[in-house]
Length: 505
Image 1 (cartoon, rainbow, N blue to C red):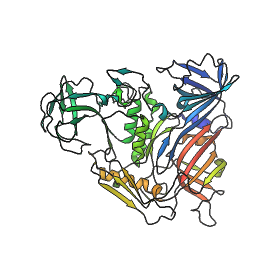
Image 2 (tube, rainbow, N blue to C red):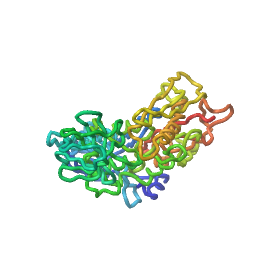
Image 3 (cartoon, helix red, strand yellow):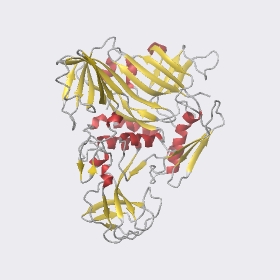
Image 4 (cartoon, rainbow, N blue to C red):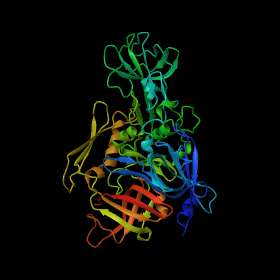
């Protein structure tokens, strides 16, 4: 979902009066409580929201966070404001019927004295670095994403390749998505390990494919009695669905269409399905594509828990320039693209920013300092064996040149589609950010641009802005850019947006 049309229209009104609600969510360390702007012994004076930001080339992502200024007596609230608790910030604009959600974060600091306090909430990636759980049972900690991969069993009757039943000591703690087959990590007593899919289980047996399946690097072999079988996690989906499944799945199947994963795969946080805007995220299907428009899909696998939770997943997708983003009141999905249209596909453009929209030009970096060097080529490995596709350029016009950017995603491309085509689509989308410096511009603009998020496609026209790619006598005229970050303050009615501008040729 997204903000209502009435709320978006109100952002452009001559004046607005925001009333905030800070909803502290019940977790194993605290109870539920709300703090308001206009009632209670502790009230909200102001709020600042920092949305998702992304760094090109490395594609490191931060969900941002938010802070609130509180005034009053905090003593009755301290047992709810525990460090690490989760809170959701809402706002009600006077004149509208319903409040809107602005941000979600994890409590990091409280600073203040004499009745005035600044409370800072870190981004949700930090909150989901581990599961919201303190449970330790059966020798297994449930504090990590995919903790179910700690479960193992052993073969009880010798298995031969092409057999469709695998007999084991126990199947009780093995789980899988309800949308497709699960996966077993098989370690023969002699020979190389391999993965094998399973479709059903009963007491002491799995119904299996009988072959080595993605992402195996070896063929299926005999599994003698006593061979170790590990409960591997598997998610086969397009990237945005994969993320949506992880953050909304509860293990019950009752939290929307994407609630198809076991409880052990996700955060254990009761995130309502409307926190993920599936309709908006699905628009990435139009430009995150394989070459020649081929289908793009992942077959995500792990046979070990993730030490860094959601951050580990984001690090994986950084290899192919994709990330989750907080947009308006919910999560969505974005991928890098070439705004100029020279390389790869690009999304539909979202907004045109003009001088009349700009309150101030904050900074213009002709060369984004986060980029240390350009590359003359980029390679993407698309198989476990390391087969690659490559793209190169002879147009690089700056130093230093770091040579070849090496990436690999072969472990995660869906082998049921065309991994080679998907890899070619990825190197095309990544190319302009690997081969050339981009200009980074920070602007303070009117609040109506708060609807954007990191990864959106915009254009900028300004007679006051030039960069190293601007021709003599020219200024910015509908220069295409990708949004790199966004933040806003409703009280001040300002939105700070950072844009990345690759060169136009």
